[in-house]
Image (cartoon, rainbow, N blue to C red):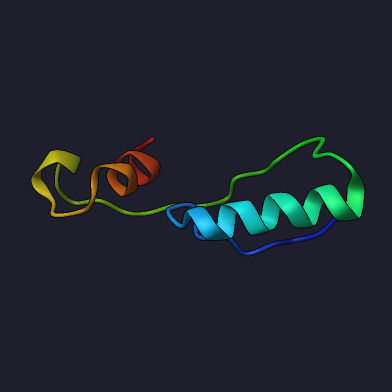
Length: 58
């Protein structure tokens, strides 16, 4: 098992991690998302880009 830090709002990092996993293991069996954020206001009341708000709200 590897732990890989990844900013899920960064397309380049997503592609780099996907390529790393493909080259090292051939495929990804089970992803574990352990990201979190504390929001004290509704997502639509922030100035976050839409993708970032969706990523961090679900």
